[in-house]
Length: 137
Ligand SMILES: [Zn+2]
Ligand SMILES: [Zn+2]
Image 1 (cartoon, protein in one colour):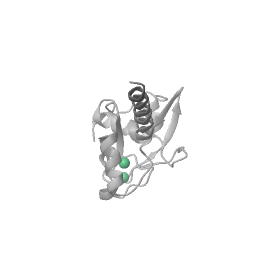
Image 2: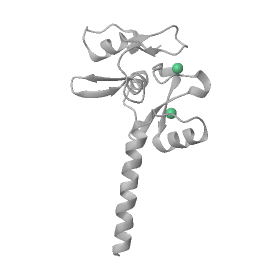
Image 3: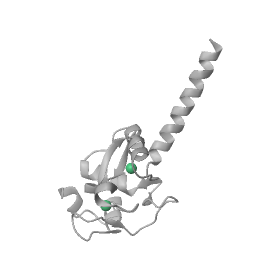
């Protein structure tokens, strides 16, 4: 486990309050979020004014950086059988939104790709706009 996940920090830092709401049966098992979830069942908290998806947060902590743009935190369910509220970074994979989507089309459907949805919407919008442009040309 990387140091940043275990090191004690000042009380009331977001990380501390997030870690306090995670049940870890073991390093390898699913780490279960006991806090609030969004409408899709995924762990979500509001920290100050920011809306934080906890599995994304945990993966970013583990990687020691933010997730890359257009990337999702994908649960490796096929291997670990994760529920929506698993936040073990070892069970998560940073995946480009497009690959992520393909992955789910190929296997089991899941909803944790919120980012994918907004990405798709943007793509659809982009296509509509370029279609209009082409029509006008
Ligand atoms: Zn898991
Ligand atoms: Zn996924």
